[in-house]
Amino acid sequence: MLKTFLFIFLGGGLGSVFRYLTSLLTQKFYTHSFPLATFLVNVLGCFLIGLLIGFSDKLFSSNADLRLLFITGFCGGYTTFSAFGYENIQLLQNNQLGLALTYIGLSVLLGLLAVWFGLFLAK
Image (cartoon, rainbow, N blue to C red):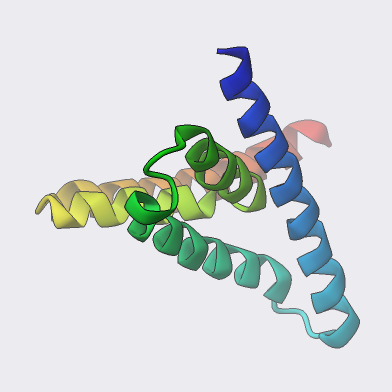
């Protein structure tokens, strides 16, 4: 169990560093008000988790620790939006359109309300 946590911890740390580097690089070349860095991180994270899961049989078939390092750890540290995207694709592939739309709608709405409420309480 400790080894599992270590792989997730290492991957998450790397993902967080890459998220920060993406933000720095984006801010260096983009100065408009659209939150491009977060947008890029979310889209790239979704693309990366799709690739990694799609190739997981080839890449991680003999080592589950690498799956934890890259998919759970790195992608989770880079962006949790990638997991959100993948979970919704799973719901859609299982013909659960209503549940997927509910999950998407509630996540966005309640996420925005939670940020607003946190800011409100902090004032």
